Image (cartoon, rainbow over all chains, first blue to last red; front, side, top):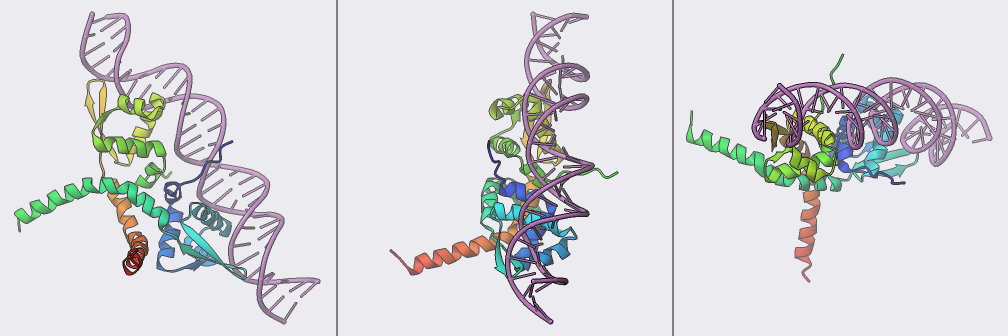
Length: 106
Length: 106
DNA sequence: CACGAGCATTTCTTGACAGTTATATAGCCG
DNA sequence: CGGCTATATAACTGTCAAGAAATGCTCGTG
């Protein structure tokens, strides 16, 4: 019986989870704050946070009954590494566009 | 009735689809080639290709009964743009590591 | 024109997942 | 201790996606 490990890609596929990461980018947040921001039920947010924890994209700090959630960007570096070889493609096209604009000023 | 549009994030969540994009990065491929490489059934690959088409990550050129698939990296630029603000985070940490190493030579 | 090659689409099954409500756990405070 | 706050987990439901098998479509070729 194989336990299917989720990946950062899976975590990012869900818009609410990307929203959570965006919120954590500015500062750490209480679970309750995230519930308020997302407009989901509290258990719904809690489940998304569990997924993000499991793929290592967030960490938690306990503070009595509260939980402070913080961003752990490392798994995004893996995604970025996968993306890197593709960057050449569209930057090529953008470069071509830029050259075109330079060579054809208004 | 809302038609749920898939996003590039959804497309990237599936490992086989990332593999297809990786194959198309080197050169255009026939659908049959992709079937051989992926080790999935032909209809299975065809369905993945449909998803990639729908989010604009590949395009198709007909050649009699054949289909040449090619990479269209533009939607990846969107993902890259989302990722950009995060890049500062881990590069900060890497910078810190580099400074540490510079200040503490072997 | 019949056949086969090359793909796409359909159909079906199974499993995963997002969301909800209900419940459990943990810690503060009166 | 009792009850409240904050969060996690459980149980359940509906939806959707991945995969295989069967079928359909298109076009070149004998």
